[in-house]
Length: 126
Image 1 (cartoon, rainbow, N blue to C red):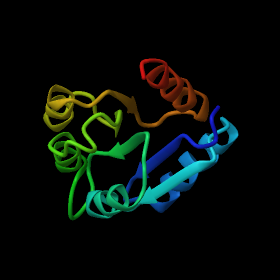
Image 2: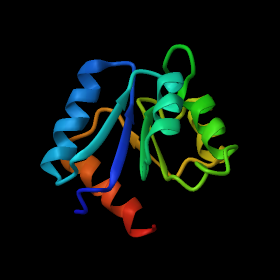
Image 3: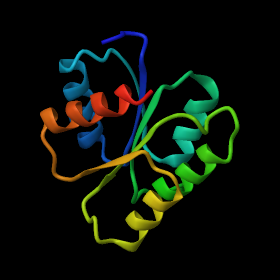
């Protein structure tokens, strides 16, 4: 995997961010950024080049849906693949996020192997 491939992990749970980081590192990804909510993610996106966003939906301040809309409305960011983390695929917010333009989703709970497989499948489409 290209070590320069940058992934932004966005989740209000520090434990989940750490788990995702460890899984990605085991999968060969080394350029990883983290944000605790959509607002912090937007700040990171303005400061760093990012190739993929993995974001929870339910977060304080700016949630995942609002983050996705902000990314899609920014000409410099709108081509970044966006993977949604969700625990409820029947949730109306989830459906709206996918209709709005999320690239894919990962249902919680997930294994590190599932996460890596999903990311690699998204990367193949780039």
